[in-house]
Image (cartoon, rainbow, N blue to C red; front, top):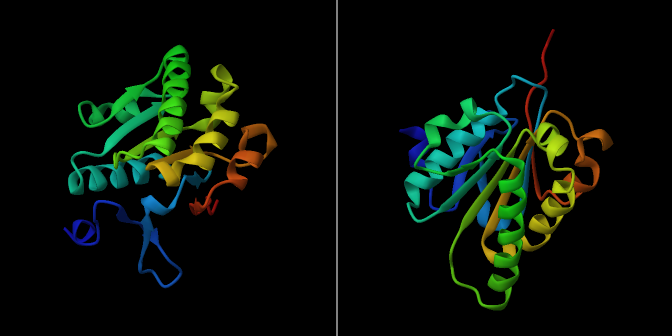
Length: 178
């Protein structure tokens, strides 16, 4: 109930700040949100929670998730469109980019959230995603499309250096204390 209290159709608590208070993200202000942390630190769970809260607050919100593992997103069947196949990812991203250019000329008020979960593994079969995500980041906030990317690291081997330079919101998760 507490999270619902702080969620609107575009604003959602997305973790805690340094004072352990809810840190809010207004998705309408961000073309690209990057979630970066080592494996098994809660990136996917945090993104799923945020998407659930936003969809609950705004049922007309369009959600598309491109993921490496189906198991992480099975609960979103019927809530978000899940894309796992590399050819489908390519087709969707081309369609979405053309849609974004059209929205820039003729705004329609429609809101989209596009998630790339586990970017490092998605890049294995879709190496062109880095360029696509940069375009999504560049156009996104102005046309009602927010892109959320999760990855284990943001170095050059992850496709992240140039990509995450365009992130207007970076969420860092606590590394292992081991």
